[in-house]
Amino acid sequence: MTQAYKKLIRAHASSDGDGVKIQRVALFNEALSDPFLMIDELRSDNPDDYIGGFPPHPHRGMETLTYLIQGGLEHRDHMGNRGMIHSGGAQWMSAGRGVIHSEMPSLEMDGLHGFQLWINLPAAEKMQDPAYRDVPASDIPQVQSQSGVSLKLIAGQWTIDGEQFSAPLSRMAADAGIADVQIAAGQSLTLPLKAGYQAMAFMYDGNLKGLNQGKALVVFNTEGDQIVLEAEQDCRLLLLSGRPLQEPVAHYGPFVMNTVEEIQQAIADYNAGRFGN
Image (cartoon, rainbow, N blue to C red; front, side, top):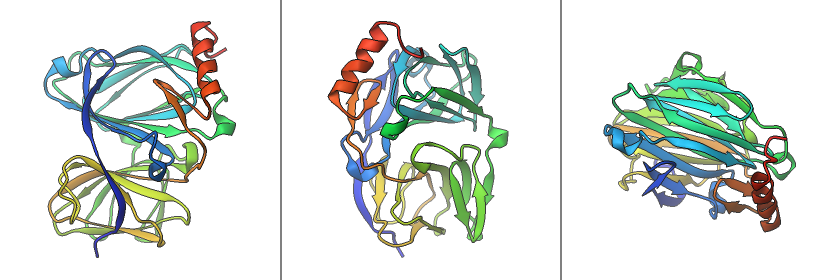
């Protein structure tokens, strides 16, 4: 059975930071993707496409999840946190009321492939203390379903073939779940879904059955209590789930709040050096 979907949102070429080339799915105006706000894929064997990295910049009102398949990235922030992740690892940051950080690629690597996702914070948590955590590859469980599908569980709680699993990042905003899924041609995977939750998948290699669209985010129809993923060809995807916040989104650059006035206050606070205080 092919899973029905509500919408397909294609990635588009863009750049960010110091000229880093990315494939981006911007979701700030997409109610169907709530609580996810943006997905960036960074993928190149040419250092000129990524070596400039992301020099110091601010954030407020959202969380980021960075997951690497190949390469290395170093995080530094104004709170004194400093951490390097390598292939298979992840970094989580909750910007809260304000954080200034940088993300710079390792100079000795010969390619970079990874993702950064933005997840919205509820209004009640947007001005909480910022926080940060590194998750090395060795801490990310890899599970194989009875049908042979491989899942790396990065964030959230998952039920696979009736067994419960907790990812290392199990308390992200909006109960977000994130898994890197590899499905061989002809395989399928059925997963239960909590009532009222949203589910979607960013297809970065191959496609699910009936979705020959290249790099794209598919938002599934979640009126039932499960989702079914079926591959016509070998496929890799980021599977996302979360509880929609159903709150207004005001977005400007690195700031995500609920009103224009809150965005203006974020800009004023940053310019006055009040971030993190």
